[in-house]
Image 1 (cartoon, rainbow, N blue to C red):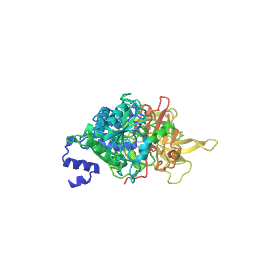
Image 2: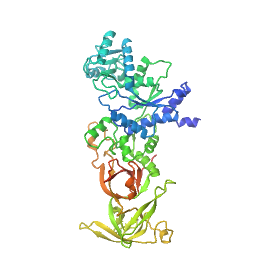
Image 3: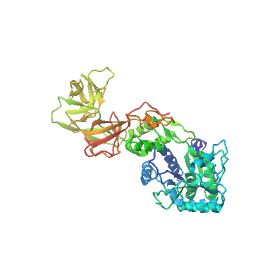
Length: 557
């Protein structure tokens, strides 16, 4: 039993302690509360996996609650994309809810706070309010409207709601403490005037609640037991608790906010504002560009839900922030793709190979395995003919003993086919090889059981039959940025670090079995890397994205 406790992360320990102190199992409830003002990114995967993972562990419901309190930036497109991402990661929410579901109740509670002398309408600008807050070591300056009569604040607040005042002219502030070192408690703004249509409530509301006011009260209304958020909200916890104390029934579950370290991954940024710049300034093709750290971008690049969840498991739940190596993410992706990817033959830098003693016009279909990692993956047939494509780097006219691929006078086995020997080459006027001529041993066919087929040669090459090959565009992706922390230098625009070679498109050939492959299906281009068919593919030209290279020297700790 002691051993099991040691393996708990600090959030699980908090929950176990709460259960030991009287919280009932059926009172445990979590939520994932995204703001629908952009697409979810790699940092959100940690929050998703933590909340839904705890839901699975404790057999507890998890709400998907959209924090839709800022109509200036929120759109239905983002709501839809968030739902798609959570589902794709393999999680199911209990209820789909919105902070806007509670606008009326939040307003009524705010009115009660005014009546209780704990909130007031301020007619100062946000700039003046910010200036009066000062800093943690200096007492704040009270607003001249802080002690205005309750009836006056009630009247003004209602008129704010009715749209009688312009944006920025008034706000509702909680009356807490202008001298506390915690700046969040220095009479925080609860409501601001925003005359913008809301994606769900239309033009009904002219005032909108601030995040801190809406968030904790939404947790309480949903009876969320553990409100888990990233570390930057740690200083907001006293305000979260103060707001709850004003409205909650002590007989009900009191939500408990706890914070974990957000996840920063090298060579990626997770600021929504900066991601929006990448899209707006056409650095990338959209939110789902495979170079983007968004979940939709990673999905399009070919990452799998399992690989991302395994990555989050390896990162763990910590209280202190650190930079996670992108190589760990690639390792997890590669590890999963090795298990699930169909092995196919593709040539991405082709040179023609002609087998001179293979009968002209003849073709045969050869059996080849789909995935040796899967017991029941089976085999498929690939066409073989006199003219093939192989990788240009797999041939050298002259090479040392450590070069186990094809060279003049040397032999290799063609995967699932025959042993060949390179005899001569043709070159163009620039000295570049255009055609390799070879001969084959017709008795060396793989799997035929002949003595010749059992002969050992050191190299095995992949290939594609030229007569059957499908021409494709292959997109090779590298990191979007050239430095590990592109937004670390405050005086340097992060766009200065964009990698100009983050994507390269090359022309290649694939075997004909890929003609009907589905978009997003994981594939291993043998000896090259892991790829997936892109959504931009057409009947005229298929496009394949490289997900990750085949091997890497990185080993997780």
